[in-house]
Length: 326
Image 1 (cartoon, rainbow, N blue to C red):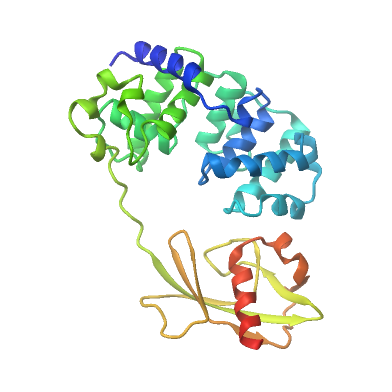
Image 2 (spheres, rainbow, N blue to C red):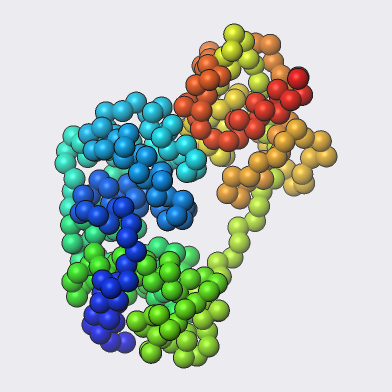
């Protein structure tokens, strides 16, 4: 394993082949951080227009930190996984107050900064010699070094993280890490592999041993869970009753309709609508209420509902109820 030669060839390849992306135009840590958060669970092509619109609304860290949460969520709408936006907003407030730390260890202390994001920002914005590990990097390293390991376990991730860190120690960690991600996104992809364009093709273990389709190993699928949700829908004067979610396993801590939920073995025979959030199969049975007396309830204008909670789940419940009553 000649890591120094691998580092050199990948950095050279990246400098010649990198895509022109808006967050690569500067070393501004705010822009780099924003792009990394947006790119989680979302493709580059989908992110670009959101990234540009978001920056137009919040051009600097200060603008984001001082904005109301509802405005941030509204600007995020469509990207999904809204806990990302909430953490982004919380971290922006801390960063605006205390400045932007330049090491992964310090960034890791902030809301929403996991091991990957903290390392990506520290290396790309500040040149810290730390390696990154995301889905693309796991795939590239597993294939390049022929590693049949359980990358979803702490032990497997640690082994891959060490290789990534060792590569970064040779310097130019910003180019190295972006090169690893770029290689995984454009050349060494899950289905279509273009080995002739890869700087590591000549000594790739997976290619040599015909293991490309078998690496990385497939993570065991999490069993889907059946949940029957019975939201109570009360609307008066164009306002809807919501509570802070303390009872459902999805959208935790967010404003949702009051009600009850139960995990079942089988899907119910009758339900009004169905929704999926990660491994939760949610079967919705709507109850219409004229009023709700609970002190926990907040009455929110229907036109502001998307600002309070942009999740399509709530819109689905409303649309179904309107259809039934219409």
